[in-house]
Amino acid sequence: MMTGSPSRNADARYRQAWHVDFSSALENKTGKYFIGRDIIDNNRDVISTVHYWRRAAGVNEEVKSSLGLDTGFKAELRLMSVLGFNPLPTIGRGGRCVHLDPHSVIHAGLRPHDIVLCHDLGPISHPDLYNSWIANLYKHAYAKICAVKPEIVFVSRFSSDEFARLYGALPRTRVVYPPVRKEMSSAKASPVEGVSSSFILTVGSLGHRKNQATMIQAYARSRLHAEGVSYILCGARETGFEQVERVAAETPGVRILDYVTDGQLTWLYAHARAFALASRLEGFGVPVAEAINSDLMPIVTRDSVLFEVAGPNAIAVDCDDLGSISRGMDEALGMGEEEKGHRLAEMKLSLDRFSQASFRTSWRELLTAEG
Image (cartoon, rainbow, N blue to C red):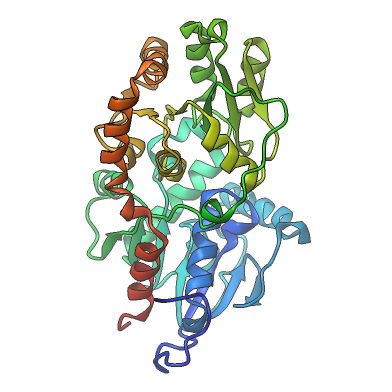
């Protein structure tokens, strides 16, 4: 089994072969961060350096956002967008590079033998859900990717199909599903103060993209609060979080948690009665996989990557329809234990796609293939 420790038998021709651009770690500590971290941890023996924007680090060194690099990173990305992406020279590097987010191909250069990890096409397909400079940034990045034609790794079949729809097929693409975080299997459950024993749970960044304001309104329509069922949400803040917090404050039974530890998140999964994520846009759906692992019936957006993760036994809803989401919540809480157990068992059969072992093997093959 492959581990994160350097292999004594690593083939010398691959050792020190890769640079990794992990600039996304400076602005995002959610799914993108954990995927990038695991890729690096699992393949330290074939990675030479890790780059965080304008700073290169040794592969065994982690650069934290608290160092202040994130401020310059965001400012320079915005500046590049405003000035046409040419105010700064690209960073020169020898060897091959793994870009852990498409935007780094702009400041770090791009070659055909590089690898680009694509999480979603949201800034292109749904620019209204992002700041305009971010949408412009990714438009430029994907144009460069299409011109150079590196290998692209997608985190879902949904994102792969969306890329093909928008840009056409490129010669080297594949899907590697992200793993359920290893912290979730080892964290000791820690109760969350003030959370009742009967609640629906949503995990994901708060904002327009994740659609929590609509889900809160659907919860209010369901009248579950009158039956003693509350609605708990947790996640980082992103564009549109102010509306989510405002609607939550106006709705009895809703509580948005501040930062939760892995132990608290484990406890929330273990004690919730159902999981809801009727998102407008996702690149991948790890929280849904985590919920299924915790025996929670998921309520997810129909015809989305969330449905790709959960499969036909999940409760599928229209993310723009309050009635559809409200009925989904009622269905999840009213489902009999026998039916729920059968449907969860079917969903769990496909969760091997999100195992650490599968993820580790797939990326190992990518990074040790002949360049």
